[in-house]
Image (cartoon, rainbow, N blue to C red):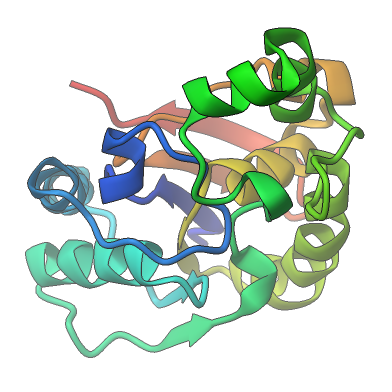
Length: 206
């Protein structure tokens, strides 16, 4: 049985490039982001990983990343489920602001707390803990059963929604997960045991 879960953060977006807080805003991928997504697909193909089903958010940068990966895999018609539970963390009042401008307005220390603390949300937005509160039930009820049934499941999502998933998978604390970076367009492959614990973890890097 495969019991394989593949997590991929979307390729670089236009707002990543401009150093803007993105959250639930919906910019497209940059040319670099498009290439990162295609490269992720090529790495999956080279590793002979063929997903049985895919999950993604309702935001276009994640959906386009998934589409490009599936093109590289020759699986354009793969069953795909889109759900708001996998959306990026909502940055609230910070959304659309340049990160340097935000530091000038609220101070570097406060912005750092909003960005990197586990449970302190920015004004009008979500903390990583809040993001986890919607990601974890969705993972447990919708994604994990497909994996444990023996499938190969591909999830194309966002830095913070994937952080929340990794936190649950690896049993990390809030302090541990905020320091975990998830690179754009780099597949993280988990093979699970029947009890949902991790048998093996591989990062498909250069």
